[in-house]
Image (cartoon, rainbow, N blue to C red; front, top):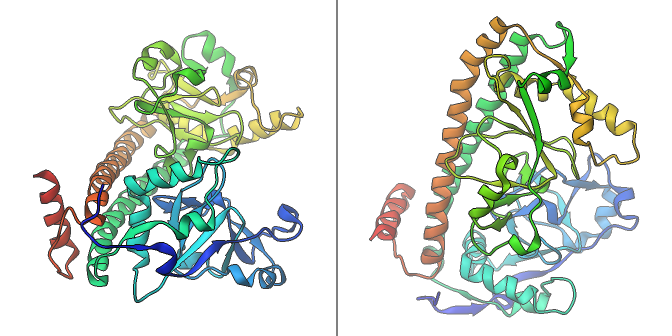
Length: 421
């Protein structure tokens, strides 16, 4: 999309542009606390991901003082499969350094607002440009310092940059608020369910017995062929797409809709519990009703109650989130050299707590409405994300102009009205 604004060369609009380094000794010198070391797994377009944040000693940080991060720095992943993911550095992680897979882009304060720059770089036209540049090499995907410096970015007046950033920030805040509510509600009902169920006070029975009597099914996901991956369609989710923040749909592969029918029973349904059995073993997620299908890879297994009158899906999920389940996973991993794999056979050989029907009914009465509230909040966040993503390229290109007001609600209202016309 062509810009209505004048443009400037990014290298001329920044006071710092360059990547970091890995401390001598690599992962062997990482600590549980200290100075944060930001890596590519922390950098996403829509958020800064705290899980996986590494730490190094003050001494190691001193040796990397030239790549110290400041609040609001724009961080760009410059190598590998996550190339061109972009975030801003939150103050909560400071002091911090970046490793060699992440570049710091620090705008000159009198020329470029960092929030506006972040919006420009994640907008679809610039994202496509960055991915094209990164793929130009003969080997691994990579963005160089020269590529970033030569980018032409729109350059509205600084005040208008801040207004645009304020609009997008208001939407981001609402999206984050909806997701926080969903997470808090989910944690609350699971904690209450475990108090009601008093897991461990009843005998465990073999999972295989529930499978044999038609109460429970455990399936793995669909093995999509490379030829089935597409540039448009529905998400095909791998273990890495199940994150502590929910499903990472933005970075999922896509498959055509007809793959859903082809996958058959290997497609999840509402209130299944997804469990990552390969790779990062042990991520657990309740599949909420979304109205839109997703297909999951064989790295993910589904535990599905097909007789809810005997085994509530909410009771099943609460049990899978308890130590009674995770201890069995740890025991399986301890018996094999494949610590990153728990087979279907292993899962079916486990033992499960099945509380009496009165206890299950009590859990259902509190869990189902709260689980539906969490699902509604996530859908709201998704709707707002669609609105933000549609507005973003138009705003940064000057295709939608908004009043120079300090009230974000006025700004958002005018921008959304313009989007709908």
